Image (cartoon, rainbow, N blue to C red; front, side):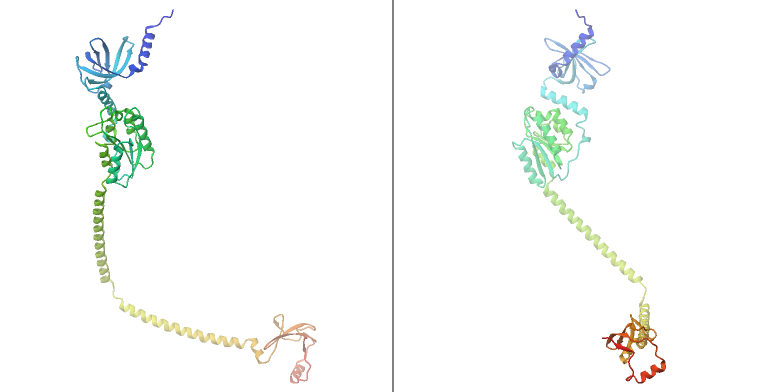
Amino acid sequence: MQVYAVRQIATHLRELVESDLFLSDLWISGEVSNLRRYPSGHFYFSMKDADAALSCVLFKRDNKGFQFEDGDAIVAHGHISFYEARGNLQCIVDFVQPEGVGALQAEFERLKARLQEEGLFDEGRKRALPRFPQRIGVATSPAGAVFHDICQVMERRWPLAEIALAPTAVQGPEAVPGIVAAIAALNEEPDIDVIIVARGGGSLEDLWAFNDEAVARAIFGSLRPVVSGVGHETDTTIADLVADLRAPTPSAAAELIAPDRTEVSVRLSIAAGTLLSHVQRLTGDGRTGVGATVARIERAAPDVSRQRQATDELTRSALATVEGLVRGFQKGLHGFQLALRSLDPYATLQRGYALVQRDGHVVDTVAGTKVGERLNVRVRDGDFPVRVDSGRPVPDRVRRRKAAIASEQAPLFSEEV
């Protein structure tokens, strides 16, 4: 026989109760009795009807300020737990509303209070919309008039923008995951400036997908600003409260996002006119200032006419001096040319003389020749080769005599055939 400790049984009962999904998310209606308020801020009470009673506790962290007394009929949300220390079942309440509000409205108020406490509705975190959006994402149903109305408004007001549709169901069991996925898809699209989450009007049940926590957190986590256009003007959803901007209708959402092209055109025209006037004024002021400065400079400039005349005279004198020097250099060069011409050895050839050369060098003595040696003789109209027949020196007197009787004297050189 197995014997268990009380604590073991109590723990087992607590785990058994808290693992029951039905008991983990309950809305319960009943009458308040035995209400006790503790200094800690916790409320302990019972909820009862004609046949039963249930112990309840509302901890301070979940108390949103709703006041109730013994005998009040309320609707409470919470989960069932087993309190081991006292050995009794109790409902851990996290939200209380007066009875008669309705289950959906009570759930709306409960989620609204919790998300507000987390800061999802804070105005300080909401982002401004782009003034001139280029790409606008729309998460809505492709069927129906909503998307068509948004496109018409954009075409009328700001046709420069491109609209990217992320189609999704906006009602029924597929609406919540569809809206969440559509917002995620638009955040992944390149160059999306702003997102519209939209749906037409309907009852609280019809709009309930936009009161879901998953949709609220998808809007809160969007990288792009989100404009909510859900239902009619009197309808308010959790999505409206979380969005960066709430529009009363889908068409109004498009109106808030799209600038009026006519108004923009008028403003641009006014700005262009103002800019032109400003530039013209600055140009006129600048022209006047430049003219005045030039006039002051001209008045302050010294008279340089005398210096200019003196400069002209110096220039003429310098030119005359240079011309004289050039003429002198030209005369000197001409003299040099005449002197060089008189020293030109080839000039004597024109007068009937001959020039004897060996390898380009002049042969000026008989002693400097050898018998059989080949030489070159240059005359006035050309040159020809010769060969030395005798290299014996000829006395000067004999040379003079031979020169005198050159016609009878045998030549020293013979022309080589």
